[in-house]
Length: 468
Image 1 (tube, rainbow, N blue to C red):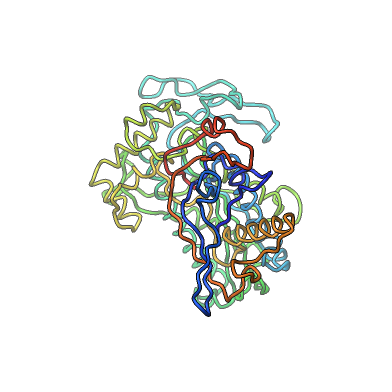
Image 2 (cartoon, helix red, strand yellow):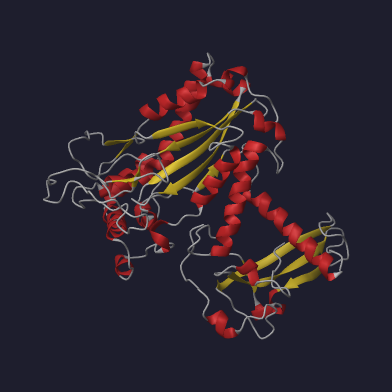
C-alpha cells in the first residue's frame, strides 16, 4: 500500500524536488465477508493529493531521489559480493571479476591525461602536429583542467564519426547480449563441457552498470560471479578458481561483433553493413578482499557512476523536437550528437535497418528519436541476472515497512489495518485506486511540513517524463 510521507516534521515525499501527485484512495477488503472500508483518501492529505517520489536516478533532476537510488545500487551490488539482503555470506568466497568494456574511437576528442593515474602530472591532450583533412589542427597541446568545458568534444567536428557514435550506443545492449552468449559457450569449451553441462555444474551471475562518457558514448562496468548450480548458496566448481573465466572473456570481447547499418561509410564497411565491436581498452580484474578491487570499492564505484548525468543535467528529459533542442544551451559536441540522432531517426530506411539489427519491432517513435537525449543509448543503466542478489523492489519494500513501523511507534498507535488487524494480515486485501494528478508540490494551508505556498510554487517542477 502507498502511504504518504507528509507527516509532522518530515519532508513531503522524502524531500523529492519533483514529486508525482496522485489522486485516489486505498480500500481494505475483508476476504471473508467482502466488507470494504476506506483506509486512506487522498482528499484528506495536504493539497488533496498523495505525493510520491519521482525515483529519478539523476542527481541533476532530483538530488533526494538520486541519493536513495545510489544507496540502493550500492546495497544491490555489495550484497552479491559480500552477502546480506537475502544472499548467503558464503558468496564472498566465490570467484568474481570486475570488467570494464569501452567504446571504440570515433575520432580524437579533447581529454585530460594524467601520468600514473589520478594525482599524477597532467600530460598534453593530443601532442600531434599538422592539420586534419578539413584544415583543423590535428592535435591539441594543452594540458586541460578537469573543469575545462571542452573535455570530450571533438577536435574536428567534420572528422568525428557522429553517426557511428550514436548507432554504437544504440547497439550496446545487443553487443552485451552477444558477449554474454559467447562467454558462456567459450567457458564451456575451455572447461571441457557442453553448454548444457556448464549450466548443470555452475551458474554465472552478473550486475552491469552503464556509464555515459563526456564524449557521449557508453562504457559498461560489469561484475561477473561464478556460483555452483544452485546459485549463491552452492559452491562453485574447482575450475572457476583460476583465470579460465578471465582469459576466456578477453578472447570473446576481442572477437565478438554485431552487424549494423553504417551511417558513416568511410571505406571500412561492407555491403552487409558495419561491424559494431568493443573498444581496445578492456580491463578485467579479480575482485579481492581489500585494495582497489575490493567488493566495497567496486560497489561504491558503480553507485557513483549510475547517478551521473550526461551534459550536466541539460538533457535529463527527452528532446521532443529540433525546435525544443534549439532552445537548450548545450555544448556543441552534445548538440551535434542529438542532431545526428534526429537526422538518422527521420530516415525511415535507416531506422528500419537499425531495428532489424537490434532484433526488435519498429515502434511508433523511431528508436534514435526516443533516445536522442541519451545520444542513442536506450538500454537500462543497471541490470543484473536474477540470481546475482536482491532487487530494488525488495529494498524499497523493506524501507517502506521500516518507515511505517517507526512512524507507528513514534505516534504511539499500533500499525493496524482498517479492521483493527495487524498490518499485513492475510484476511485483509489492500486495493489502491490512484490516478496521475500532476508533478511538483501542491500543498494546502494544512501543510504539516511548514512549507509556504510561495516556496512550493518556486520548487523545481518539470513537465516532461523523467528518465529513471
